[in-house]
Image 1 (tube, helix red, strand yellow):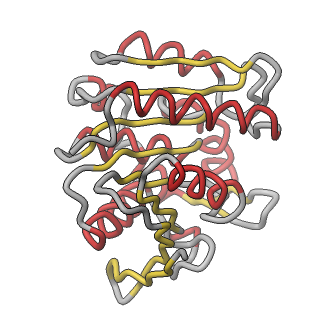
Image 2 (spheres, rainbow, N blue to C red; image 1 turned 180 degrees about the vertical axis):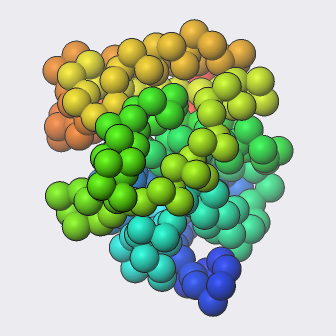
Length: 240
C-alpha cells in the first residue's frame, strides 16, 4: 500500500509525498506541473511504475495540493529545494526523474546539479524561459498574474526564474533524456522541445504526439506510459 510522508523543507513548512513501494532498488520521482499537484494522472503513473519494478514517489510542491505555503510565494528555487528534500528523505542510491510541464523544468535543472540521477523523462516540458513571456508581461503590467484557478504569481517569481536559463542545463547534463510533447500544445510550444533536443549534449528521445495539446487524452497518456517504461528499461535507468 502507498504510504504518505510529510517532509520538512524550510521555514517550518513541509511538503507531502506518497511512496508507492516496490521490492527493488530502482526509484522514479515525479514532479507535477505548475498549476497541478500530485493527484490525478500521477497516481496511475506511480502504479504503473511499481508494476515496472520502480519505487515511485509523487509529491506536492509548496503552495500546491496538501503541501504548506502559498502559491504566490513559491519560486523555481523553492521547487528545487522541495525536490531535494523529498529525494533526501527517501535517500535512494540512484533515481530517475519524470517532470510534466513546469515539473520538467524542475527536473532538468535538478538533474544538472545532482549526481544520482540516471535519466530524465518529461511531458510538455518548460525548457526555454520564453514560454512564460506572456505571464511576465502581465506581471509587469498589473503587478501580478492571476490564473483561472485563482493562483497568482508576482515579480519575485521572475526575479528567481531568470537565474535558470536552459543554457545552464545544456552544458551540465549527461544522462539520457526523453521528451513527450503534443504538437497542438497551446501552452508550451512543441518547437521549444525540438530546439532543446537539438542543443542537449546527451542522448535524447523526442516523441511528438500529433493531435495532442498541453493536456494529453487518455489514449495518449496510455501510449506515453508504454513508451516511458520501455525507454527507461532501454537506458538502464533502474540499474543500481
